[in-house]
Image (cartoon, rainbow, N blue to C red; front, top):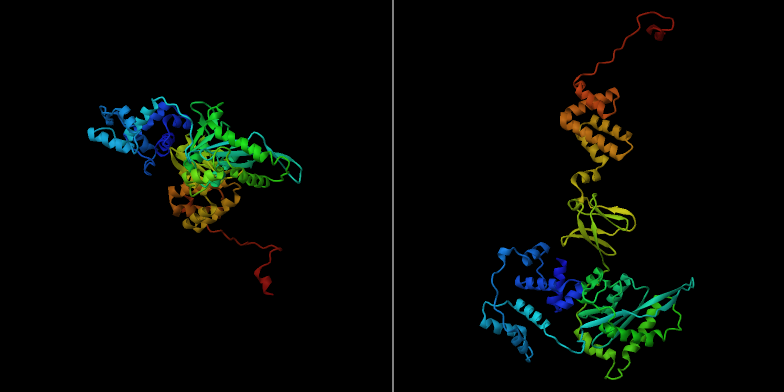
Length: 506
């Protein structure tokens, strides 16, 4: 269902074609067309209502066959519609109203627009590539690197140079990072959008592993974290085709300018930190963007202020937090393992596959598009368990304490409390104490608290200390018998070592 939501967002919000959506999401064009046709028939728009979850969306898009409409609605002459759309002031909404005037029971507006887009895809067109204002940014890494030397150890570390170029104005952004790994790749995009003060419609990237997990000319697989970042900023990831540098010619030219006007000028300087290097890059970048165009009036900065900046989407209120996506299977102990740390999920999901959204601070577990668990992220081996996720019997054992059991014993009687306290003192393990008190409670349920108190009294009097002693007393009804008084006998014979009472009278 997440894939269908992405298709609807890219088509209805970003206005991408079926071919572009297929390339962005890595799914067949036939599937994209089917999803869009079904959504149009269901009358869905973007954004979807909050109350539509995955199950409701599936029912709307894939209803039972008995619910589907029979017959086919009349369609207009699409060639005539296409010619009308070339006229000044023509809109699809206006053309659709004219169509409904002739066919009141015709296609709904969403279906009308979708079928018209499909018709346009059948037309063969040739045109020079143009870049609309605020439409695209091209991103890549420069080939050369710059050294950073640690002043304490003299260790030299090479920094990668990230470059982003806006399509309409050719405005350049550049910064130094330690590597091309996913966290640096995502962080560079976030800082680039903040530098621009807005977000373009499309991000055109190369096929590095941090961006594309499987390169393809037709259906590349974009990294899930990269897609999540794009969704947060409301933009689209559009990978360039492998071995087709013209697909990202702006990035190639931007990298060339950065290499010539920034990196070459910094080659003899010594930098001791990445921050120092980025300050130098920022100063030279301002100069590069202010250099006049050779064949056009103005410079990149002026073109950016005039063309791209007003057309960029506004930044979201919150900055994107780096997120990883995992798919894991819940263990028999209703926990999932991430980096040697175990996190609990509801026990009903044992052995089921769940999606995990992992940030620097949180671990969010989703099942069927719904969040079922959320934990603060632990670092290093350990275990994080929410008691509400546990089986009721397991939860009782986990939260069991000796103090609670002694309180129960007091409610039965003082001798029961004394007997249980002595028994706990002899148990060296918590689980052994738990079993013993469970057995004593079982006896209490069987014979009642009065007889248990009497049995514990007799056990204390005769020096019995175990549960089986109490059970034996109850089984033989000794708890109902009075204890015999101790007999005191005096000697009735004379003996020289025995002093009589008279001895003490003198």
